[in-house]
Image (cartoon, rainbow, N blue to C red):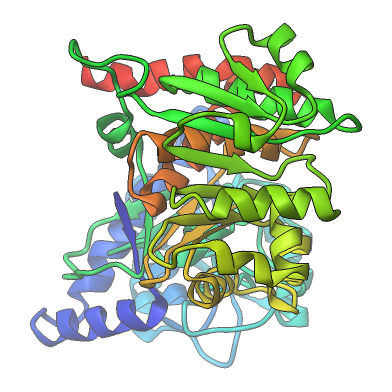
Length: 478
């Protein structure tokens, strides 16, 4: 897993490193790595490095110093470098290094003419200690940029710990960070662009957030062995859909089938439709008649009336892991007494979007979605998968994971139903609920990218892309 640390933890680690490292050494390591990445962006977008023009937007903090030092390194490669100074002062050592290397230094007032000629612009305006949006002078200059932007550590104007943006901010082509990933790099992908980590020797343990990589998912994905049968691989029960919303049942059950659950049992009013689409599913009319299962996926399209409440109450009372999605989360929010049927030690995963979260918690998630998910997990003693462009998964014990998407194609009707089926199948296989939720989100987003191929797609296509997503992940182990 990739570790992600809050800015407070990063500053503490930097303080320890500064205490045992010669003065200026860490900045030179960081800025040299930054210069390599700026040169790479130059080559990628123009075909050459020498003779090209780079403009540094340099604030008065250490990020501005990193940019100035990187400019000095770029001068050695024949790059024309102009630093536009912002703020009340410039980093002295970095500014002196750039001047010695033959770099040009101009005021913010003269910045527009140089920005217009730039092949790459470097955002060294503010660092991880800053908060809020760009100040007017910086915002005006950033608005003039048409060239690719390389951000130093993080895009200026984006909150480093939440990824929130509440005003003018930099939208980077590439963000070069140092020592460790910060929350912004996972929570604000559309602002950071490609994120590159430069190792400067920080020592950090026990990350505040985690992000599963492909190897994690590949190693943990359930695969049948020679002694397995349809029962030992996990039997998932699906309580979804209705006469009004039969598609929710088809999508949820289909995702469970395609996720290689040992067996899928469907219970609900859409039994005939599910059988017609997925003949391998054992379909019955009620949850009481479904037969033996190892986990339930309940909620998509069941309605929020008395019948839906009875279904949720029955499923929660079976002493089995449950993924409660869509209408099930609304039922739990409006009729919390249904939770009385649940053994508190039985795994429960709630999968709200922002509106469902507001019903569950009485308030919107707000800009700090990680804290919001943790608070809901603690209140309900459940794993909470907070949906959004970036998915956050939190456990009652405080563990949190984020899944950074591959595009925005999953914003399509029925996508959440597919995620429920995926998650239900992993719970039935016996995986830890927090890990199961993070893995389901990972495969869900990968299947979305495969189905879309950079064009609008449907949730039906998403279901059929699940095996290819799993196959691509599992290929790492072959």
